[in-house]
Amino acid sequence: MASFADPSVLDFGKQIHSQLIRIGFTANVSTQTLISNMYVKCGWLDGAEVATNKMTRKNVVACTGLMVGYNQAARHRDALLLFAKMLIEGVELDEFVFSVVLKACAALGDLYTGRQIHSYCLKLGMESKVSVGTPLVDFYVKCAMFEASRQAFESIREPNYFLWSSLIVGYCQSGRFDKALEVFKTIRSKGVLLNSFIYTNIFQACSAVSYLNYGAQIHADAIKKGLVAYLSRESAMITMYSKCGKMDYAHQAFFIIEKLDTVAWTAIICAMLTMAKLMKL
Image 1: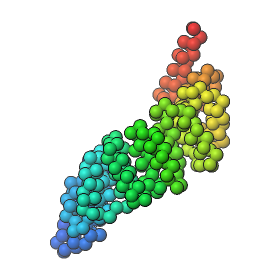
Image 2 (image 1 turned 90 degrees about the vertical axis):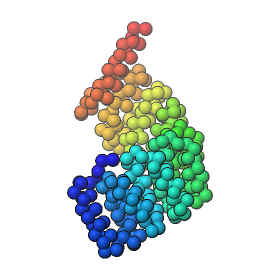
Image 3 (image 1 turned 135 degrees about the vertical axis):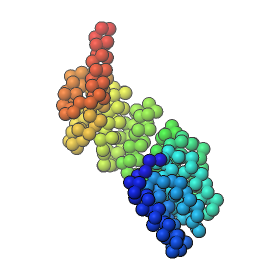
């Protein structure tokens, strides 16, 4: 794992750790937690593991910090193993550790373990918390369990736009574009804060079902909110208009892009090729 800090910072941290050992300050749980987290932030997971294992009494803060380090280093199995050790050793859990371990399950596509952790969240009454519900919805989406993701979503008291986005992306990825559009209509009626990411995915849904009128309405709505410049360089709009047979609109969307990239060029070229094929038929 690459260091998150300058090597000299890690060396300095090691020196402080050595000094604390000499004067006998490392027996304190708070100090041990700080040392473990320091090594994680410096990217030295071996040192963090040693520091955590030597703790007189493991706590959720130190273990969660190490699990975050494992996830960042793509060592998701190690994160799950550490979580299992926490359960065995009776470490008191909080909502944040569930958030981290669910991210590990999502990265691995480990449906079995993720479901067990979900059940544990239910027992502790944490499934309604946004910090737990968000990675839970994302986990089920990534495992293509869309009904489970919807049920997890509905149990959350105050869903944020990250959750709404996860649900829309999940439906789009599974080809259930009509469901994605239903969710979008719901969040608009609830006055949920919308971002460019949500709009981009809805353009893709409108494109897939050739829903021109609604797509045009959403385009106008995005313009009003000043989000047009952030819609993946507007390539999603180019694709939507071209698939709906509106090449003139597709060209307009293309020409107003300030900085053209390969995605936008690919979108307009594909649109022109598709139109050329249709004209030959």
